[in-house]
Length: 417
Image (cartoon, rainbow, N blue to C red; front, side, top):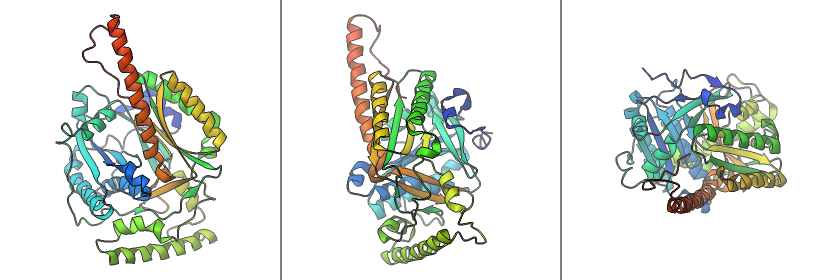
């Protein structure tokens, strides 16, 4: 049986170990992969709706975590969507929960959430790979790290209007209780203590896992050389954190979790506003209640953030200075010109935090994204670079085929890392 596969994975404790192939294990063929993303998220972000986009992106994760509270599920938050892996026995239970989130996204936010579920066996049948590791972010949160070209295959399949049709879910309303329990969005934007918050995506461009691992290791080491150790470039500074009393900051949660009517949503908004008033007092005084040590809680929260992760693409949110970012861009441009990678980078002055809190002093995760678009805008730049990269490969392939260097070029493979 493979239902405990993820729970029993060995845990790595050093982030650079995500570039070590021996830390990964093959995902069981009888598991399934869930991919969600908001269609036209770039347009929504341009309209200033980045909090709505982040909140829906996190909703698919919390909806599935709530199905089995004691089950350890692997997931990765992508800003405007998410990736999750499911054991086979949970799939039929997961579908109505995901369809309910789709319905809420459409009916409340007027955002179309695309969700697809593909068997891992289908990935392997097409000769793609999918491996997973487990990184200990804190004692309360372990982050899945997913490697392999199978992710790109899944994303491309889901987005294909013909190939993806049989895997896509359709929105359906549901009265499932507790669907989004634990999902919160109650903090103000977190200013960078150095002036900039950088959302970074890096995709290594190489033919083998070993080569991709080497490129990713070089990138991580260079980021540390430029920005310093983890604590020095962490985007969540506890001194800059503040619970919000602005209704506009709390409205995304109130609309999604408050109920179907405007009156219900306003009542919910009023309730969490007063909770934040109380929370600000407890944090300011460092009070200790029966369930929560409020002097310690900000450190627990900071330690349980997902500001760096890997899903066949390095994702990081970094606090730094303009000079450091310019140095990073210079390095990335050099590596890109050498054909080693493509990247996307978005600069803001603060970070957004969307939270899943099941226990205030225990099980929780806080999703971090750059303000004003973050990962989604970085992804746009990455797509532009990738198209240029593929175009260059095509031209090189044509030129090489004319000189007889490639042999049969009728079915070229561009790689999918």
